[in-house]
Length: 363
Length: 116
Image (cartoon, rainbow over all chains, first blue to last red; front, side, top):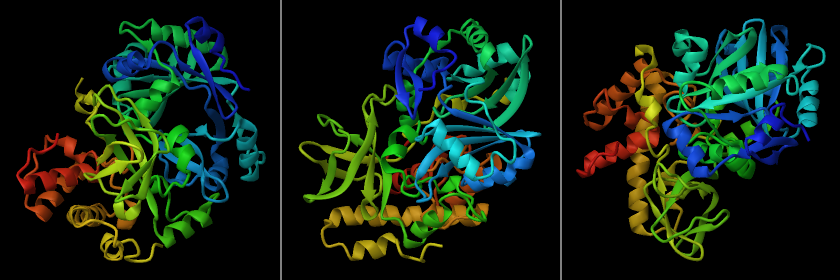
């Protein structure tokens, strides 16, 4: 199992660990509510070093085009594409950020498969011939998320960091440490990912938690809730359970004009056949408990199944995702939940994140 | 490419005997509004998708379709033109997704409190 270079430091801070696709993950530090709250109203810091990271020289663009479903060739310099990689059956394998940093592309993947499998797939796409470098051990990836995350980014990297658009990459120097700073996140609040050399990871982590604003350690468990009620795709939850990018509503991540990418034929065949089921938000009526895999019924017939759910401190009640038969896949409807109770389908995202009301370019 | 109309909610519902009338009416009303919003988005913003490709919860701003502020103005114009409702340019919250636009349109039509 691959451990983060930050493992010992985080263990000393009380981290609870879990495992995902062969990599150790800091899952939590205090409580879900505290860590969730830190991101919605302040700043949270998370070790995302469990992700798979690769450097692809610009001449290796073909590798990325064969691997990822999105429009890699159209990523402008300094920008980041959010897309996915699929297996040969067109089922999700990795949730990807691909950053164009001039002479190199950087691939950051949250994956359902382990490092060996991903390396093997990239090799099939020509990685070895193009000098693709695996950075998963030689770097760490630190996430800074929250309504006030921009304060910390500004304190460390200067005011020009506020001009970075969402899904962009820039290189900064922090006391001689080269940091690839990516403005991205999956919580609906401000988010930054810092890719740092492994030997400097602890120094950077300590600098971030020592910022003027209080920065709270946040584990992946809290991110699972933040992604769901912020309506960001989560490969570890609905992605792992459903795996069909079309049923998950990820068509926006696909380059429909791409010549070829892994799984394209299968995805195009399902697209041509038409959707049979799709994911929709659900909330329980008072007294009803959402349960994973519980059937949702109409007049005694199963029309959907609960895929995932989370408590939502922002909403004050749980919220979940269910996979509905297409004729019933609309928000604003009420259904019975198998066993007892009722659920209502809802529009997502269910609220406007406070960060969307802040205009950084006016700061 | 998807077959035209293969998943048109009307076609699917006509063949469904086990859906009660009230639910069918709710779905018909919402499907009509969603279809108009999707078609307008695709046309106005020249999006490379069919209506079926656009999940109703796809984020319009930032992640997802990644519309900018000029696109947002276009979308607001489209909503006002298609449905005869007034949308404040400051009310970005209704542009969270296609579904949130539909919620707003349906609430205005029904004289309900508009969602924020």
